[in-house]
Length: 274
Picture 1 (tube, rainbow, N blue to C red):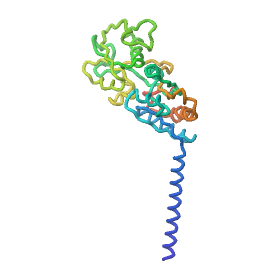
Picture 2 (tube, rainbow, N blue to C red):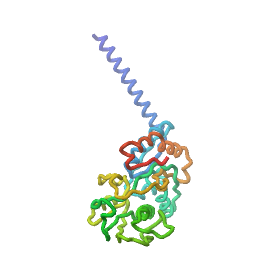
Picture 3 (cartoon, rainbow, N blue to C red):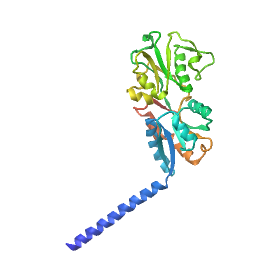
Picture 4 (cartoon, rainbow, N blue to C red):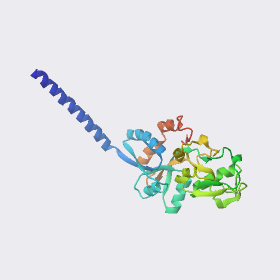
C-alpha cells in the first residue's frame, strides 16, 4: 500500500510539474508578444479586433483595445502617441480632426462601410411626413454633409450647385417640406428618435442598437459611395509604415474579419471595404 501511495504521489507531482511548466510557458509566450494599442468606442470594433488579434499573434503581436466614450478622444489619444492606431471613423471625419487640432493622422486601411440612413418612429414613408417637421442630423461637418447629401439625392432638399458631401444646413437652397433641422452630436442621435415631433433621425448602425433598429427599418438609405465614408484603421504619419501597423493592417483586413462582416447578422448593417 505504501508503494502504491508513493507511486501516486510521485505521479501527481510529475503531472503538477508539467502543468506548471505549460502554464509558465504560455505566460512567457504572452509576455513576449508586442502590444499594439487601438482606440475605439464601438462594440463592433471590439469584435473585429478580437478576430484580428488571432492573426496578429502569428506575427508576434497582440492587439489591445483602448475603449473611449466619445468621437474626439480616440483621435487625441492617437495624435498624442498614447495609442498606436484607432478604428472608429471615416476619412472626412479624420481630416476635420487634423485641421482642427493640427493632427498628423492618416488612413492605414479601410475596413467596412456602415449602411447609414434616416429613421422615423411615426412615419412609414417620406410621403407620409407633413411639412414643418423636425429632422435630426449630426452636428459635425463631415457627417452632417453626408446626411444632407442623402436628402439632396432623394429630392427632399436642394443643396447649392457643386456642393456634395461637404454641405451644411447653410448650403440648403430649397427646402420644400420646410424641415426644421436639429444638429445633434452623433453619439446622441439615437435618443432623438423618441423625441416628440421628430420626423426623421439620421443614424449609424452602431448607435441604432440602442433603440433596437437596423438599416432594414430605415425610411431612407444612402446609396453606395465608393468607400468615401469607409470606417478605417487610422495611424499617424510617423508610424503608419512601422512593422506593427503593417501587421495590424493585414489583421483587420483578414479573411476572418471579412467572414465576420459578411455573416447573416452583420451584413444587414456592414459592408467590407477591402
